[in-house]
Length: 402
Ligand code: FEO
Image (cartoon, rainbow, N blue to C red; front, side, top):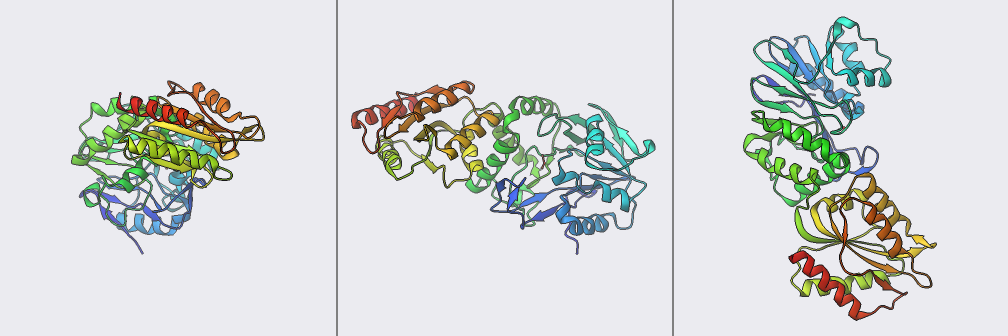
């Protein structure tokens, strides 16, 4: 059974929606599933852009066969070698033995690492930045996008129709449910933007500089449509929305002047002080604050929130003379994903030797362009100075309004 849809007259979407996967990359929870996008161009020559995850093989090949309609496959263009897209390359060669694979030098290196596939020289085209491939009436050119998300990543630009195939960039977690284009779904809705941000922050977030570099290249192209490897296809009128978010995220600029709190609390005392602080902030008119218990919240959600909010508050207990393990994990992921350019405040708790404030500060100060707001507040078990908490709330409010 196939499930395909035309993107344009000559381009067919042959990707697959996966609602069965619980954890993307065996790490990130998927509440709305995920899509593995793949596109078939039918010109005088046919070209398939990327494959799909191995788990959706039957659906993928039903789609490809239906879109080909009995024609042979001339080219397989590989924009990204992560297995959620490249897993079926070997199977493509089994089914279409005459196919020519188009990639860059790094693509072919990775193919030899992932597969024991001997591709004859005559069936390889190694492309560099700006090189072109004619399919007949349309010409494709290739744009290198290293480290957006892996080093071999490239974009394919269909110059004839102004369509940019962007690998992982501009991807979103979640299934499209047949609404293939952004014009068919509420892409400005909070849930959708949360999924787009969580995807960017956790998958590409570390590579802001490289994302900026490719955004600069995109400025010189006439783009009518963006076709990523996950999520919906961005229509021309919707492209400025996602481009502006990508520009912010990749410059590590907060989307909102708002507070996001990340706390751990073993017996509820630290949480109680966080609640008092949030009431103080609320009464001062601070809106849209978010509070996350690190013990219960998936780390990818919290990292996503750090790309949204300008002010991050950390409240942590001292645990084995160090940090609570889940708080430590959050901080190490922040470092790995290059979270930076934020204001932060600290609340620490310790019954006999509070250490968490010092450890939080050391880690946060080791990140780029982080600035502490006010003094760290110390809680001893369930005891703290109300005046110090109020001063901290005033400092946070003043900073948010600055
Ligand atoms: Fe969707 Fe980097 O793979």
